[in-house]
Image (tube, rainbow, N blue to C red; front, side, top):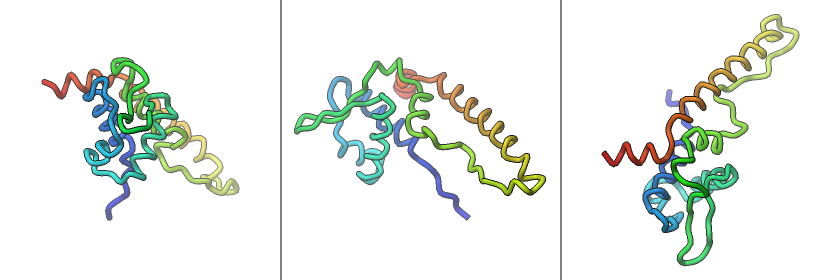
Length: 139
């Protein structure tokens, strides 16, 4: 059985690196959608989260497009993760019946695991900036 995969982080990283690669020129949504092979609706959702996270800005018009809000060295992949996964837990937790002896205890245990996993992911992703990624693929 194939499980659905959330690709927002990968798409976000891809489009941010397209923006870095473009230098001072804004990057159009059309160019991004073609490069990441995503629907415009999905791409707008990802870009909206990046904007809400303070990582990108856009300007309309024929010479408009998307740009970073700060230097690529100042944006970590952790920042990207937090922008696209805000308020989304890494694990899918459920609401067990409190009258169940296991259910009464499992929630706290699972929330603790969830918090440690989230912190580990963010700590690891904070180690690499967009600039680091560009330098790595330019080798």
